[in-house]
Image (tube, rainbow, N blue to C red; front, side, top):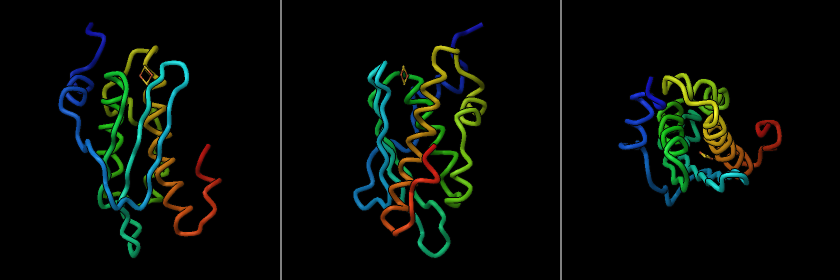
Length: 134
Ligand code: FES
């Protein structure tokens, strides 16, 4: 069996939503001290509906970090903040048809990066960000 699923390879080779949002409503950056990989997520939020209208990422990291960033952005785009807060690394991994055990932490980073961007959004609109960063 191949180490990486077709979906992981697809999102690694053709990542969705790569880039920056200069007028982002929330920016989150997280890193893993062991591997040194870094992810930064940008979100644009409709203040009326609380829907994430756009999301972009920049990831300096391994193939799985890029694939999970890409999938995570696809999974929260068009969702409300409340729905996006429910995103888990497990859901990202399932959507990618799995990751090797040694790469599970890459999906954790993707979940944390989305939540860090959501947390930043909450801080900017004056809501206590602490409950959402776990
Ligand atoms: Fe650390 Fe992939 S090896 S994020």
